[in-house]
Length: 116
Image (tube, rainbow, N blue to C red):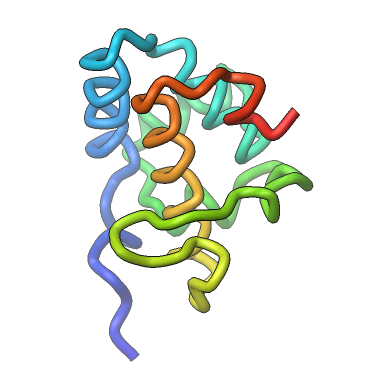
């Protein structure tokens, strides 16, 4: 089975797009980072290494310190797919992140985005 193209893309090549999407809607890079840290368990230092090393999405998620235990509360449609029904575990994690960034850009409060 062929791997999806995004799995081998450098996280650092997509990260600026997350920030841009958020900033266009009046949100901040800090909020994007908070979402990423919440989802993956990375801290700022670890995350900077990911960016500096041009780590791919597959490695980014496989080496994440701890996927947030509330990740199952992330539901809804992103890119035409219900995130809770995506079968490939890696693609599901990528879409979880996409969904959270989408919610940020749509003006949801951080409390709701982080499933507090």
